[in-house]
Image (tube, rainbow, N blue to C red; front, side, top):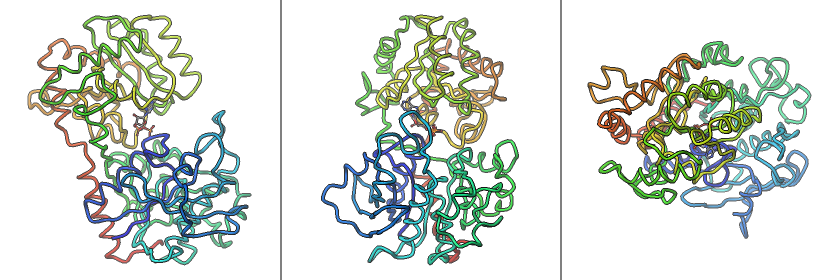
Amino acid sequence: MDVLSVASEVYPLVKTGGLADVAGALPIALAGQGIHVRTLLPGYPVVRSQLKKKKPVYQYDDMQGGKASVVSVKVGGLDLLVLDAPHLFDRVGGPYGDPTGADWADNARRFAALGRAGADIAAGAIAGYAPGLVHAHDWQAAMTLAYMRYGAAASLPTVMTVHNLAFQGQFPASVFPSLGLPPQAMALDGVEYYGGVGFLKAGLQAASAITTVSPTYAQEIRTPEFGMGLDGLVNLRAGDLSGIVNGIDTEIWNPATDTHLAETYSVKSLKGRKANKRAIEDRFNLDRDDSPILCVVSRLTWQKGMDILVGAIDALAGMGVRLAVLGSGDSALEGALLAGAARHRGRIGVVIGYDEGLSHLMQGGCDAIIIPSRFEPCGLTQLYGLRYGCVPIVARTGGLADTIVDANEAAVSAGSATGFQFAPANIDAFLHAVHRAVTIYETPAAWKSLQLQGMKSDVSWEKSAARYAALFHRLASKGLGTI
Ligand code: ADP
């Protein structure tokens, strides 16, 4: 089976979050299920640099105001189709915004172009390539399904995967004429969304099936609290909605071979973690003592509950634990965390920035990872934590609820506990969970049992890829197209 995947970021080429990890890992896992995935992504500068001497497989004289082409290239195990449209994507800055962090003003055009190219490829634009299903990731790819629905590939089955419903691609109605869709598309059951144009909404409306990245999040987005304005539509489509938890790349994330670690280790012996913990103490200027080091690797945002962490900093320091934070995001939160580190020198260390290597070292050397998210579609850092024996302390929401077994008495005595859950996501509940963790940490054998149980959890893509494969086959055999 041939599947065309459309995504705005793909690891290892370009990554701002978990979406890239999934778009980069799922094709490789699906290959093991007999499914061949080609992935269409935009030609940002980092992607274009891979394109030397590559021939276009399809060309546009005018794609949203300039010449564009689709170029086929293989990178690692990935079979990529790059939408090379320099006027839209070849610029200094991030995939979605300029270097100051402001959204690119022409994002509607940029990702409409991605969708248009996706739909054209679905309809057979590339000679000799006829995908049997199209898989769109998040709002940036969602218009693929709208263009298919109103164009030549309306009968092909499609899957819309929501990695985060908070990002919707909502634009004013004035962008509609530039999309090149027929007038009837500007309707309640089309791309119209609260008087404007909604890219994700259009994809949710058009898809044969909708998936989110965990079963709990699939249920949560049916409620007004998590549905972010789309719960009505999500409920209408509830019969086609399911949740499939993300896996992780267990080769990249393998404490036995990880070159980012000061010392490697495995489930057979956790001794190597000590050298990593020392390296963390050095990197974050933390005191050397026997207390646990809790860590955070995260976007610093309200969604991630980073204001809860900020509110709990003094109490954490008072509990005698140490804290290492790696992240970037809201400048107010960055400032508050740095201020906390200044107040508690030796106890709290903060690195503002994005550092893939350091994130590995933290999982390999810290004792626990804190994830106090208000909502979390799946979350990856708790899965890395499980794999590295860095015990997750998580808010009970979305994928965090689905992947961590709370160390309550029953789970501890059954030997099935892998971490700590708390709810609701507030300072008191969070501190209570940390207190429970610290109490267990004081009994090394009990803590080690938590670590080992987590390290034995299956966090690979295998099970999840099989679920995607089953869904794809079911849709293909039904001959279901966009509605
Ligand atoms: P989201 O996609 O919502 O940001 P996820 O937990 O699904 O959250 O994925 C976040 C990914 O980004 C993980 O791979 C995590 O390790 C990585 N990450 C987040 N912040 C940083 C950072 N400051 N430095 C390095 N990696 C980071």
